[in-house]
Length: 471
Ligand code: NBP
Figure 1 (tube, rainbow, N blue to C red):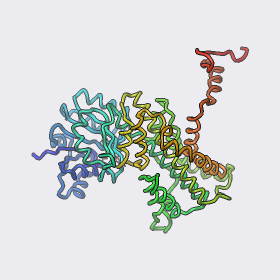
Figure 2: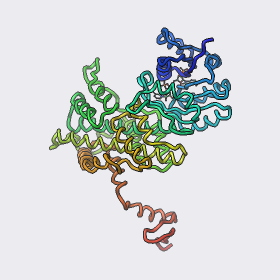
Figure 3: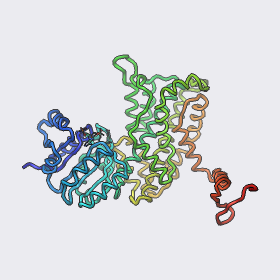
Figure 4: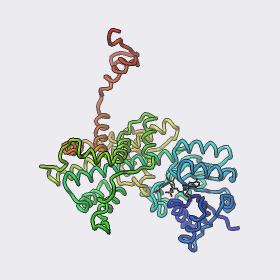
């Protein structure tokens, strides 16, 4: 019987394209999907003369794989993934390799690794980024879990991922749930960058009165410079896209309610759990939540006071120039917070993450791929324990030169009542980080006043409590 050297479970958009990608690199791929019709359609439409083996039961799927089996799971995260694993594990043998390529929560991955270990299955939590196109042509893959399992699939993964300026965009990032944790923070940074771009769009639109095609020119110019990245590239294409029915820019016909699948929220929840400040990523999640209150916002627009959003006495070219710096600083801050979260999580969870390696894997294939990752990687190569990107060049010089621009843009936005929560949070984070004495002394006094929570002093050692008033 012809056996496959790779197997894919889950034939929605990601699974199909990854199966085709692996097959295209001279492998025979066995495929299985819960709903048989999807498998039939996939084979009928996409298989042609390809080396794909359709299977219609997990038992058959497992039997058609050469050992040790190499299986990639691309099903919906959460209960569906558990449902598949519950059926799959009993069918496998010691030494088989299971990769979960879905956006699984890192706690789920740790639990599944423990389950797999009982049977000697080599389990990998594998974050995959790049969407539908990346899955077919070259994604970025962030792997974690059983190292020996990774070594067994490394050759295949390196051939199917995007080839970046510094090699294939995949790596073993650490034990346990390291891969899924890094993917989660990747998505948190993605939320923040997307929201930053959306704020710039709003300022250009409502502040300067620009049309989408004009904005496309602005973003296109930025994308040819230091902000060159996938998210700016697609924004330019979106702004240029005309709706066939109305002849207007399609973006202006899209409902302004942002949905989410949860990875940004998880990233923020984990930042809170490990006690790392990542307010810009958190604010991007809250901004999406605020956007979901559409009907309330529509009512409030007629009720709550605020200034006219249209800028007066603002030179258009000057504003666009400063906005570039404001956006750049906010984007760098999102990366800075994300990398700091990864470093803190790595310490707490024992991942042993190498930030420069994470930057390398993000250089191509993934949604946050950007030219900026070149200096970011360099910074972490110089100092892998660098606590804050802005402490090193070229980021320090850029901040020195342009923080005034960020302040000015935010001030203009506030003067005109245009919300810029991500830019705000970035500036507040930077100002907080550079403030040697924050007003937290007053918080400590308040905590001690009402809860006898004690405080420390700056002029002597020890822990103190004060009876703040006569009882
Ligand atoms: P979906 O996330 O939409 O999942 C659909 C797949 O899950 C189908 O194969 C479906 O089988 C299967 N499935 C479900 Br739903 N419940 C199941 C169950 N109880 N038992 C067995 N199979 C079940 O597909 P996707 O968008 O291709 O994403 C796959 C994974 O990759 C997800 O974890 C996603 O978060 C992650 N991811 C997606 C992207 C992206 O751009 N879409 C990017 C990166 C990562 P059925 O056909 O029988 O319903």
